[in-house]
Image (cartoon, rainbow, N blue to C red; front, side, top):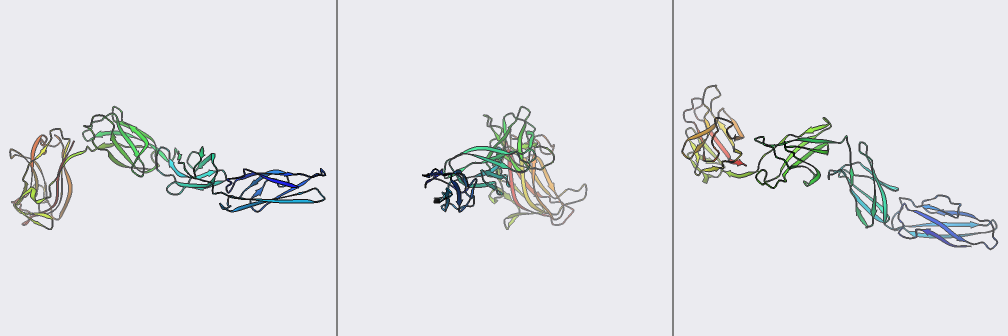
Amino acid sequence: MIEAIILTPDENITPGSDIGISAMVTDRDGDALQYRWESNGGIILDPEQPSTVWELPVTAKPLSYESITLTVSDGKGSATRSTSIQLSEGLFLEGHTYFAGTRIPVSGVEVTIGKFSTVSDELGYYAIPYLTEGNILITAFKEEFEYFESVVYVEHAKSTYNILMESPTQSRKIYGNIRTVDQITFEGLKVSLLNPDGSESSLYGITGPAGAYEIDGVPLGVRYLLVSNTLPEPHFLYDSVVYRIDLDDQPETFNARIKIKRTVLLDHYLSGLENWELEGSTSDGYYLLERGQHMILKDFIAVPEDAEKALLTLNSFVIGGCDLVGNVPSHRVWIINREGATMGGVSWGGEGNNYNAEVDWYPSESPNFMDIYGRDLKIKLEVYGENPCISDPFWRIYHIEFSYYY
């Protein structure tokens, strides 16, 4: 007589589970008994033993029913008994496979928990269902990456765990120096690798006394570095600056020598008509200067004495001027001080010349553009009136901007 079939565990059984099975059997004659276990799904490891293990199929569906049958014989007669279980959905573990210290995804990683495995997608996402509560061993493997193994405690219906992969062949050390445009270095600046969403990763370097930094384990590919100021003094870098780098598999190290462009303290957007005394005309949103005409700012621009760099930006189209050596081009930009003296300028000539560029004034770097710092300035744009090269030169000016950096 089969009095009971005992399952261990007897609840919260998920697809792929291993269930211990045994039976309480009595025989009044004390005969030797023969056992035979059978199931409608899965594998019974030793079906002719009174106690064995029933391995449920990993393909079984949650909430479906699985049954097992035991037949016991004493050679003269037999008894049969069956029992069934309903599978539960179990717990669900999901997460991403990332480069260590970042949120940069690693795709194609084989993630395994027990009998279940999956491969992370292009975003590094993976998901494994049908888990039971408790400590589980999770492993991850991909060629050229170090083998990953960890024990995770799963207790929620939907748990999250991110896997951090390391690869000496798929990452590089970045090192270099941080300098200002005038070659000044600062100790204590932070250079951080950014995640794809723009947040800071945990990979960063801090500049030393000579402005040198290094970051280990930066993944290959197009990456972005954030240079930020961790110093208590606010005078150096008011805002953070982001730089793009492109790491490939050669060379083994990447020397990121980057310069900090200091924060723009003041931009003068000078394209508005109200800003200028204009001898020329306007048409379709641009200024038009012809032979002998000019436009000059109505108000002065004050450039601080301790400004680092002044910048004039022009977007214009030039017709006329001389291409011959020794002749004077017809289109000029002048910087004029409060005393009315011309402090420097730049000229363009040639026919059909689209001009869209920045004109830099550095302190004391060029004899043409000296002593503009700590002064009030005006800008004058003109078409030179005695140009022998072309009879009707003109200059279309679309956008004008003057700014300085600190």
